[in-house]
Image (cartoon, rainbow, N blue to C red; front, side, top):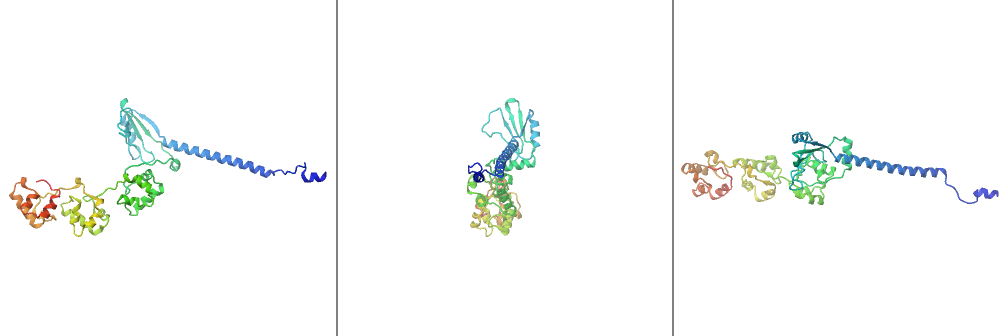
Length: 341
């Protein structure tokens, strides 16, 4: 009997768990419950911050002038007045949005059916910590809009779908002197994925260099130009009377051949709004001779032609027929913008 008690107590042969094991199991259960509760509270807090950040306060203003003053007090961006009660031709007709990326600005909607009642929506001021939570957890809205990769801001790059790190990389590339001359240059950036480029390609808008607005530095930035040809391009523009009339005039510059022109033809333009008509019919002889298509002999002939013919007969073709201009010079001058007599 004594041996049985020594072996098993009740004779069952089973051993009980130590108290420490049971305590540890209970602690683990409470730890798991506590962790899940903390995660739930964190998620709920984040959701609340994001939702409140996305829902600005709403103020109803009857007078549209008051609404305009309210909108004028917001951070720089766009402002908007959209008809609420009237007919709209298109979902975005009449819309202008106030504020920049992330919806920080104000917006307004005008009710055309109630005598100009205006609804102004203006977001509250949020703490830096709330803004940080919003940027980290808010659902990212990818937008498509026209942009110049050489000037677009970091915030707008994020709106276009780039991460903050990718946007910073593009901006840093520009700050170091990099430039996107063509759309394909932007596609070659290592932070621009092929799928992203295919989506954004129709919206990339890189302005061409206007030959009549660019300075020597802008010309120098063109491929294959350099300082020498940049200065020659500025000098030749002066000789033409202050402006180029068409882009191919660059090939009239010494050693500026077709190959050099073709390498940058898609990067330059001549906007007619910036072309100065050449005052050929009023300039004195010493000024006329400076034009590369005229010279000393033709300048004297033009003055004589003006003195012996009525203004109604003055034309480049008439100067060619009179032997004042050679055919080649008359052809090039005929393409130029010339002021009327």
